[in-house]
Amino acid sequence: MTKVVRRALRACAGAGLVVLAGCGISGNGGGTAATHDTPLVSSARILITPRDGARDVRPDDPFTVEADEGTLTSVRAVDADGKEVGGRISAGGHTWRPEPANRLALSTKYTVDAYAVDADGRRAAKHAVFTTLVPKNTLVGYFTPEEGSTVGTGMIVSLTFNRPVTDRAAVERAISVTSEPAVEVAPHWFGSGRLDFRPEQYWAPGTRVTLRLRLRDVEGAPGVYGTQSKDVAFTVGRDQTDLVDADAHTMTVRRGSQVLRVLPVSAGGPSSPTYNGKMVISEKLRLTRMNGDTVGFGGEYDIPDVPHAMRLTRSGTFVHGSYWAARSVFGQENTSHGCVGLSDVKGGGNATPAGWLFEHSLVGDVVEVVNSHDRTVSPDNGLGGWNLSWEDWLAG
Image (cartoon, rainbow, N blue to C red; front, side, top):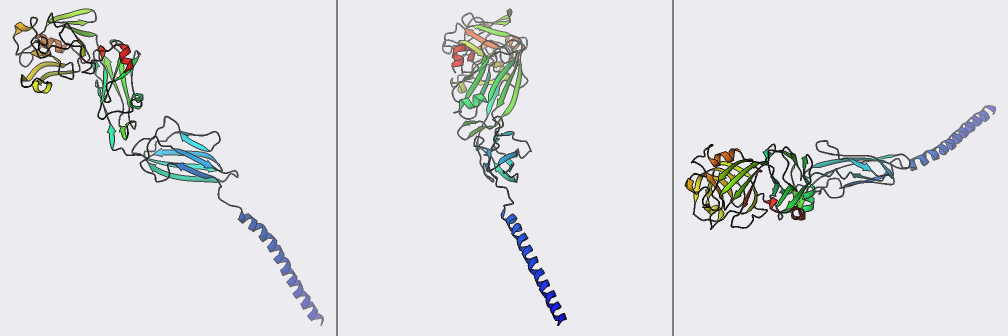
């Protein structure tokens, strides 16, 4: 009997222990369940614009990283070469934007990695990749003078564009011309396809001039983007100007205040006089072909080997050697089709007036014609911008 009771007590005690243990587990289990109900992920949400996978993103489209219910801790945006797009997180930590100077490039893949924390310090991260627009139409500026050249004091920096420019302000902001020693250099538009730069007066000899092209990714017209980012430097040489008096049939060549030589010339005849005004040598050719068909004179002439030719206008005015003309006309008559002719020999001779002038001239030298029975050359015909007053130049 006693043994039975003891066994029963032991069984009850064991059962009680089980119950107590069960109560203890239930209590602990409640605490564990409460822990699992609390989210383990950050409540911060990151939004990247442009979205992941976006294509044909324009460089001026919004590029932002934003944090909702949290604050940004870091943002890194790089192109395919690893070059970083510098940016700044706002004071409140909710927005990141690239700095104004860090404009996106065209035809480029960008990778963005952003990190944020919520109020409980839990981290969130987001990764995005997008690609900028690949333009179908590009804008190119063809410039003069050439890199590293030495030019005359009348040189005008000129750019002609392969497509019409409709946003002139954007293109103008992307191009600058500076000099050492410094002078004011101003731009002037001739229509939608040409932009020239010059100072108020001729350059001082020895001036170092730099053209800075920052046209890459600049939208010059709807859907038309620039491609160039380069510097072009040139040096201004000695000060030489040539004064052609059409009535006197002479060209006076001056270096500074000194007269180097007075050359006999034959300017444009009565039916095709030479333009008056200031023209700038833009090209030097030891031999060239001159065909009347190309400048509106029909078949009046076609000379395949014109020596010592120096271009003054786009329309075809040159200073050149005239081996086919009688020497008696130089200094006596105006017989050309609008050019300024000097005595020369076939093939070009260095000892002739034309040869001497060619060897002593630079692209950028000013040739001014006076007393001709024609109008003043248009400022956009060649590098004729010196025929505009400074006020008129600035107005353009």
